[in-house]
Length: 115
Length: 116
Image (cartoon, rainbow over all chains, first blue to last red; front, top):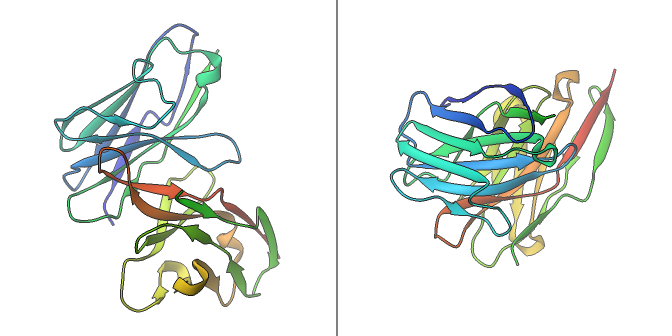
């Protein structure tokens, strides 16, 4: 199957700083990328959907200014957690798909810990 | 409202035994249905999917699932479980968000433990 690479796998940052997470589709052009948040022992919560070259569509309750999403190319999307706080600590997962195909491929996830 | 229910939070089976993980969905149109597996430290992997056609779907690793429209179910099965199947299993239904983008609605997951 198609490969989606997420970087970094884990990151620890100080409260108040910003953290950027990258999501790359390695062998296909991802017209749509999805960003999820997963709490321990819970399901995935969709945060936003981004189409290449367009503004991301955020799910209800997700702060746009807090979680900045950029999808500038067909192979790269980034999620920036701005002014991180301990409650932002979580597992963040991206997935990517291409047009006309509803299957999405997932990255390995990023464990963010804010101290 | 669109939703996915996985009634069993945790299941334990013996190696070699058969397995069935339940999934029920609520969706107004014809659903796209998926089963994913998440192993510790690994990304989500697609086991199988149903878009249309034959309601019995074969997936990877010996898994299969059956779409039953009358019961709004898409249960995952495996005839003989291996110790390496211990993982978290998620059922999901494809939908559209406010921007008309495709998205997945997820169940809460079923944690599978396998006894030797």
